[in-house]
Image (cartoon, rainbow over all chains, first blue to last red; front, side, top):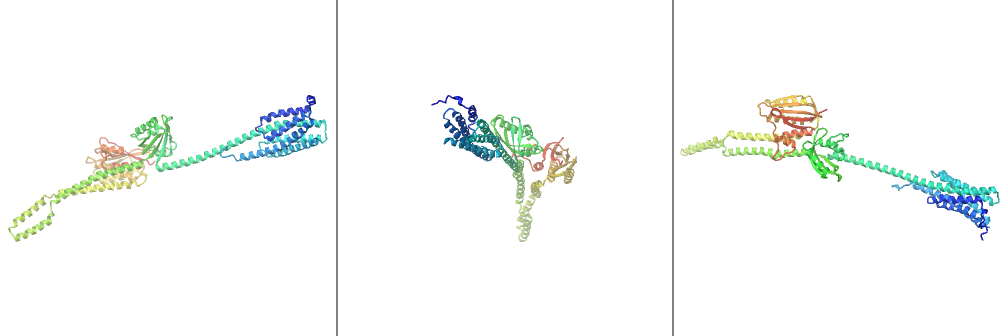
Length: 107
Length: 504
């Protein structure tokens, strides 16, 4: 069932770098999880999924993971990124508006 | 089927990045301090567009190893920059925004605090103005004594009552120095008990203002804290006018109760004696005429009756002889003298009140003294009046000064025991803004009781003066900002010194 599972030589070094970068990038994402908009985390999550699946597809179930890579990783990341941009824009606007009307006591 | 959708997925992803790029670019132009985030965001979005664009091209059949390597590298760059650049800067911007917002809030708080402080300052100024007006209107003031460093804090009203300048910052010892020597101990003890034992005090005492005027104040003090020594807060009220009114009322009461009653008693007594003397005699002339006519008629009627009628005539003549015309004249003179005294007393009271109405003005003391002495010299030619050193100019009420000097000269002459009384008037050099005018006589000296009531400022049924003169002098001098001192003349007599404010 897993004839290619142990064939690590089939892994693409470049794609492996992508995975390492993606996993390394989780550090700032986790660190700033509270301050970061959820849609950025989701978008990054999609990119991580893409990075994982692009490596996994070389080991097993190429078509499935390839599909997941492009459907979830690439498309999902693009859409989530667009939504994150929109949401972040809205958030900045709301913050700016609330800053302009600070209550009397300054709280 | 699934494989055919893959380029579509990549294309949609590229469009997503493209939309994000557009939004990011727009926001970058409008953003303030979050520009760094949008810059990183736009950069990531541009890389994303490029990456997925290349991936789409690969799936559309444009394949090469270089393209594959490039797109994979771009994927790594996009992920890396996204994680570090975009999310990192987002966190940074959030921190910056929070900090900015906090700073802004603090600034606004500071603005509000400043506005609040300004408002309080205005309210405080209004309260101070109101306090000042109230103090002026009510003649009151206040001070706080801090016993730790012996400093005093005065209100404007207190400064006005003590006649200190705004720059003066008197301490405890200077406060006590302003108190009249006779009342100094009272205040010292009251302050001591208040600071050490927390006992409030309330008393009336005299002060000598910085300008040298004597004033009566009513003061009430209490400790501010429960500490030892406790700081003291006191309110003071200028009651000089009230005290003067009380004195006048007291003296006039005495005049009505004592002097007037005595004089009226004299009149009544003289009148009663006259009445008794007159009661023994029925109107003699008319009666004698009648009796003589009747007697002459009786002679004509009957010689027998002659003897008895002559006896009757003799009785009337004896009664006439017993009636003392001189005694009756003495009584009438006594009535006239006493009545004249009463009228004079009344005139003096009226004159005093009229005199007090006039304000103060610069007066050349020389001509005024010459005028007064000439007037009294003419009135009492047997007296010797002299004036020395009258080159000063004073400020006062000329009528009041004339009244005061007149009273003193008149008293000196009236009460003199020598056949030729002398009154010397000396004008001294001005000291501390006051010109001394000394009225010296060679009389028997002023009774101690007169000096005592004037010094204590009050009379009692047992301790009172004999008239209005000395009180009048005291009142008119105080009203004009001066005061009176009495001492013995050498070898005999009295020196009454009037301290009149100098005109300069």
